[in-house]
Length: 371
Image 1 (cartoon, helix red, strand yellow):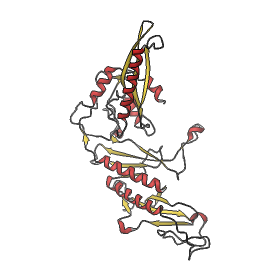
Image 2 (cartoon, one colour):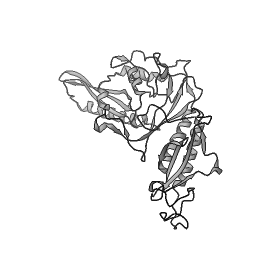
Image 3 (cartoon, rainbow, N blue to C red):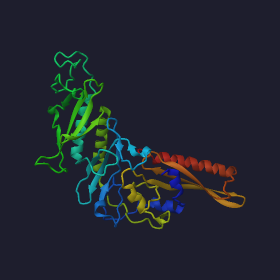
Image 4 (cartoon, rainbow, N blue to C red):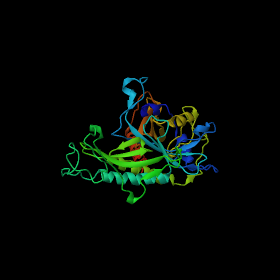
């Protein structure tokens, strides 16, 4: 849904804004929510929904095929770009959070579920593999090798190339050096198979006619994930960031009940799961729909209002800021209320409008993540 269209469906008032800002300081003891949880919790939640869940990190994959959602979708929407989705999850009865990886943006079942320690180990292996994959290729001719091999193998290649290798099998392949530590990661949160734990392994591969090596992540020698060296470093950075986030202490003060005397579209408003102090809140339906991967949540809150009179009819220019969860920067939304359909502005009202917009601009810049 377009942000501006949805903003029109979310009327608000300065009184609502004051109440919403007060939510950030309202204490309700006895509830321990991780600050990274954006799942939202309700008394009517099904057992399967009683969990903490963080904001998804979506990473495009250049080497993976697009995802086919089936012929029930119209042609333009049938295929979606391949992406790896990573998010923090924690069941309410679990002591520590886990990092959950999905191999495509439409998946409901996870590919890998690992502890923060395992994720940190994987990030280290990805960085080491990327360094090998980015190393300059040999330029000297191969002294030994089959007829199709024109240059020497990379230093990390452990393949025994044969003349009868099929074209697609003419690949340099190598595991990471074991001297720097274990190169296999036992996945403690996964179900063991035949007495052996599920494992992650990181390796490097390069077809003999390719200009760049690839980083492969395999789960128990199956379900391989192929990454460019840059993607491997990006994934490592995401994992380390989430590991750090997982260690932030829980918050026992964030309320779960509806905000008193505040509604959105006529329905009770609940506190913003992203803990944005300027957000007016969200309905239960908005929060539960946002739980599904691919859906977005619109945050909005009133900033200021400029009154005017046109042909004897009072009106106002109401300014709110809004932000969609897939956008890094909030945006301003101006709504004309009252009057005769237009706004008659004298010099004073023009100055007030300019001042209001400058204030809104400053507010948006300060509301950006990392500001």
